Length: 216
Image 1 (cartoon, rainbow, N blue to C red):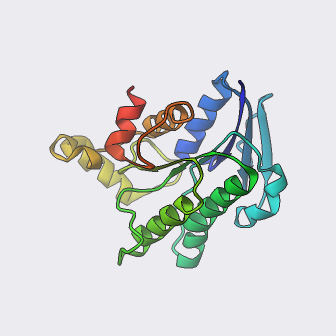
Image 2: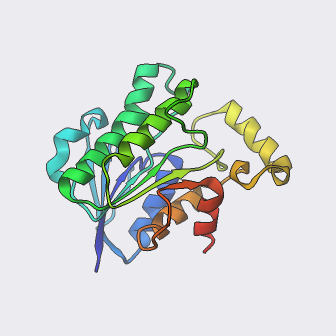
Image 3: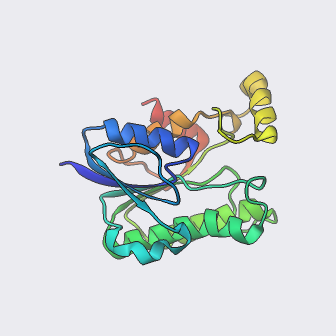
């Protein structure tokens, strides 16, 4: 049966790749975007809602689908204000999960990060960990939280620290444990799509497991 997907974070690197996959996939008859800015794509399947994502809860009437993908995320360099950072990386995914529960959407797939820990003394790891905790508290039947390591691929904005990390891991990645090796956004997007139809035994999926799922 054709499905409707909601995608948050479609203007990001992984979200953009996932959007292309969903639009080309016959399983999906409609792809609904909630975003601050347009992706600039015209497609018969596509439905865009340009909104203030900090007030996502006001759009519950339109938040109806079979699966929700959440690729929302920022960085310290892009969002140095900690309050705003928390609104993005914690507030939006948790609100989306709450709306899933409220509207009977039984599949929620969200990108977190390696090192997420609600008890961490590191602010950024703590925020991701608290997001994971509170998403899981919604008890959505099929919840998958992906924890990728450092992403490969080129971004539109400059991130010097990430680029140095990518170069290092590209050269020495074979020496690192699988969960720490570089992962491509294409791999994450592929795994997210597969998780629409394929069940996984655990809600929290590590970087190495993401690669396993994507590679079949």
